[in-house]
Each structure stands twice: as structure tokens, then as C-alpha cells.
Image: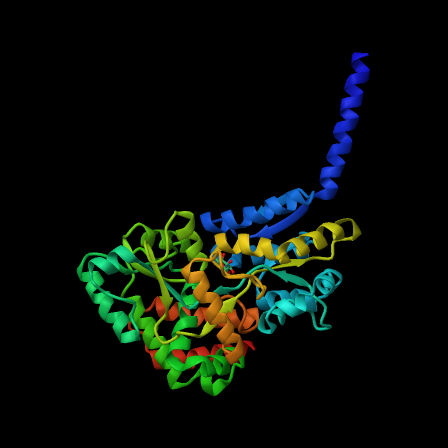
Length: 416
Ligand code: GAL
């Protein structure tokens, strides 16, 4: 009798186990900071409610360089995950290799075309126009996050010009604070460079240089101006910036050690996670000279062709990601705004509302432009060549801006 019971329990366990295996969806991502993890939890819980176990495969490293390297190796070994967090041109690369599954059945049924802005949907589809990725958000890179207490104490306001930014930074330094919290990693320098280029030449210039890769624009006076700004910003960071993770830099602003950080709005996710409120504890404003412009990156989930058994779970994940109320809940935690334009801004705080309003105008004026730093302006290999020049310059105080602009143009030309 006892033996029979044991066998029955074991059989039940085996069935359960097989069911769990079948129902699990493996997702590779780099969302490991406090704010990022909180946002991802919304998706994990949503998938669990839909009957799928979440097989979590995090690979730490802001900006996702490390995660992309691991993915490349897994794909080469014939072991891709079911789903992967992906940005811009990376999606295109894997789609061109024919490795991504077609999500069009869900996309067409749910009318994604009507709600996803065209500059973003361009990255969600393969060459045949089939949906191969589900966009979860819209991040913006040309933000500055500031500690309000420091601004109030020193009676300074958000700068309207780059010169004003340098002037308030002198006051901040004199009062014993670090003007700019920065993490010395290539993608973080590139994130600031997005704004410097936009500020130096405006949206039409940014588009010509960073997206159309026009050699004359790339080596122009405007590009030299952008490098000039980078050189001045280098004087505003502390001595320990090298290698620092972006969220630790955000924490320096949250804790009042530093006054500002130039970072995409995933930084806002950290402020929110720490219980801070915009216009009470922190300020958000555009890098001077980029008001109204919108350098975007969008996180998307691309699904690999891993066989019929997993396809249902993958389509379920795609549908979950595109659900309007999920997009609202997720983006409230992530710091970004929904990838769907039909989600109301009611529940978003001031910075989120501003981003949503600015996006509308940017879409109309064709100034919603892909971020260089986050893989939405140029193919990944070309981006990498650009990163090298920007980071080398930032780490060599005293280097010539004119030379750097020439080098930048040369590196992009050679890689494209
Ligand atoms: C970006 C990504 C964001 C954010 C950031 C820092 O590339 O799009 O979602 O998490 O990296 O890790």
C-alpha cells in the first residue's frame, strides 16, 4: 500500500515536472538594477498568470554589451533562448540571418501597426515586413537627472544653454558636490555623446551624421563642437568614474553626492524605486540645446525559432508585452513610456508625461531619432567603431576635438 502511494506521488510529480518544462519560457535580458528588476517583475508575474513559468537568464551589464556577446555564443552553439531583450539594429541582424520567429499572427490580430510609431516599428520587422519582435517601451537618452536639494540650496535652475550648464557646475563644485555623476564605460560615454551631437547641430544634423552617416556631416565643425562639449563634461566628473556602473552613478545623485547625471530614463526607474518624486526630490530636464528633440531607444523582445513546442509560449509572451495595461504598469516602474501610443498618460508622473507629450511632437516633426549609443542609429559594427573614438577621446583630456571629429568620420566610413 505504502509503495503504491509512493509510485503514485512520483508519477504525479513527473507529470507536473513535464508540464512545467513545457510551459516555461526562457528570456535573456540585462535588467539587473533595482528599477529594471522591478519592471521585469511585472512581466514575470503577468506570464505566470497566463500559465507560463519564467525561466530567467539575466546577464548583468548596462547597455547590454555582455548580454549580446553571450547571445552570439549561444546562437553559434545552436542553443538560442526562446526570447531575448534586443535593441534596434541587433534585431535586424538576427532577422536577416533568418533566426527570428514570425509574430505576425498575433501582431495582425491585435493591430500593432495602428499603435506602434513607424520609427520604432521599423526595427520590429524583418525585410519581408513580418513582425519579429514585440516592443515593450520607449526610452529617451537626452535627459539630465538632478538632485533638487542641491539645486535649491545653491539657487540654481536647469540650464538653458551648454555655457549655463558649465557655469552652474562651477557653483556646484565650489560647494563641495560632484557636478556630474558618470560611469566610465563606452556605452555611457556614447549616451552623453547622443546629446552632445544633438545639442551641437540640432535634429537635422544629428540625422544626417548619425543616421545617414554622411561623411561631410560626420567630420564637420558641428561634430567638433560635440567633442568640445565632451571635453568640458570630462572636467565635471569625479576621479573614480572609471568603470562605474550607471546605477551607481544614479545613486550618487539620489544620495546627494553628485548634482546631475546624463542618462536615459532608466535612471528614473532608480529614483522611483528609491521612493523619490520628480519636482520634489529630483528634477528631469533635457540636455541644453536638445529641448523637444527625442533620441530614442526601445527594448523589444525578439523570439528565436526554437521549434513548435515553444511557439505558443513565445506568442503568449509577445501578446503579454503588447497588452496596453501591462505596458502602463511596466513603464511606470521602468522609467520609460509605452511603445504603444494609445496608452493614456494619466498614471505617469511629470517626467513621463513630458516624455509622452514631447514624443507626439517629435513624431509629427520627424525628430524622433534613433539613439547612436543604444543601437538605433547605425548598424552594431559601425556603432562599435564610433564608440572607440568617443571613449578614447573622453579618456584623454587635452586631445584635439578637430582631430577627434576627423577620426570619428574615418572610423564610421571604414566600418560601414
Ligand atoms: C539600455 C536599455 C535600457 C536600460 C539600459 C541600462 O540599453 O535599453 O532598458 O536598461 O540599457 O541597462
